[in-house]
Length: 92
Image 1 (cartoon, rainbow, N blue to C red):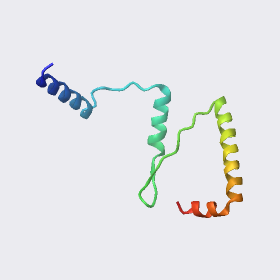
Image 2 (image 1 turned 60 degrees about the vertical axis):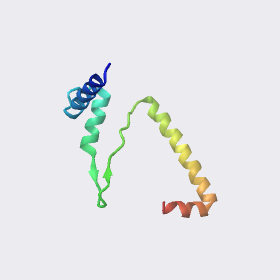
Image 3 (image 1 turned 180 degrees about the vertical axis):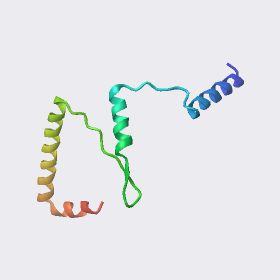
Image 4 (image 1 turned 90 degrees about the vertical axis):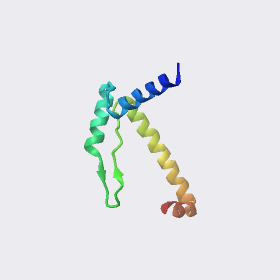
């Protein structure tokens, strides 16, 4: 392949990206996720974007919630035992 062929393929690739020629086929889950993102995007008073995390509800989400709750409670116990860490982490 010559340098001209390389340049030509790179220009074609760039043109396709810029003009969105290559349409991606999203799965149903990805389509739902994108829809939730577009409907749920907000901006706060400081100009930051706020987006809700998409949560997939199934049997495994209950297990994940229980694990997250256990970790939260462990962190809370740790911070109660070490108030110096708790007060310094508030202002991060």
